[in-house]
Image (cartoon, rainbow, N blue to C red):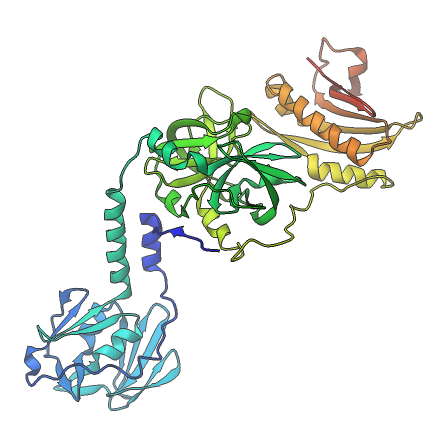
Length: 514
């Protein structure tokens, strides 16, 4: 499969870090046999340039047998390398980042990181000045060397300088990119965003190749079947998940045939995003296919180690897996979550992780792909109460709301005298005190989902599931039913009552406390 990644460098801060980091291992295979420089009859006419700056030297460079020699200290200083002169052994020790070079006067064998390398010419001592072969030294430290015959000069370019020039060129290109209106971005990419329907729910996706669609991991999680619906209302079957990254909430699904849409290029553009930048989101909120919204980058943040772009561009349920473009028409994020509020608090996973994930794709679409392994077992029939409680605690120990994440603890599973499977757990009383009324509908939706899963795994059981409020007070609270308040002694009182009561078998009943 042909995959095109948009070329881009990282942010200035990260780029600076790269400039200061150790150089990659130098390939010294060619360093042992330098390309000889053009000879000249006048040593004084030879100029030496390091990173386009002429080297000021105490003694003139000279050429001998096609090799140009340069005063040691001035050259190493210009190359930002440290040098140690061992006078007794007539030995030069040079260090730069992770490279160490040992040279000896009159010796045609050097050591590079302890490995012997043969030289064309040995270092020399003239007029109390140590001269070293310019090409060998520069290339061994990661630089490049060219002979400028027109000006009779040796031109050395360090790796750092070359990187800086490329970075400046990139920044110049970055600053001169064409900006597009939301309508122009829609014209370019409306067919690139699709709706994903699974047997578990609804989401969005971004076409990144002929048969590959990028989406959120949670859109395809626990799904056993899925279809992609294009902007032309064509439905295409999904054969499975080609690559996934649960930690960063991303997955790439594969279709059974060509999607026939414009692939979106994936690159490192999200690293250039700044607060206040304009953005355009395309997705299917509440199933309204390819809805367009615009806004600003509100913030850049890291949640559990994942880089998110916070945006004011409105999204909703069903937008997960949709595209977030910057005003240059470049994909910068995959819309993943949002809160219903006047502040328009919405989040997109940085497209950086999608770039990395694409490297896990096979060269061509694979046969016999599978969907993700289910997070819940096919059945709990015959399992112990302890195992059921442990599974529920692991998989349902929290639920997300617009006000934050609610913690559930103290899970218990028992069977009563009538044969009912009774499951109880306690909600964080502080969370309920502050947000209980605001999260009622979120809790109802979460409870119905749990009830559906319990019925699937235990189809023949009659089940009662209760979430309790349970807290100890230093006074006797008023207004509660007598069965909900218990004296503990020493001036302590326990208040306990059901927040949610759910009962199910062939049908489901659910009640939440007002």
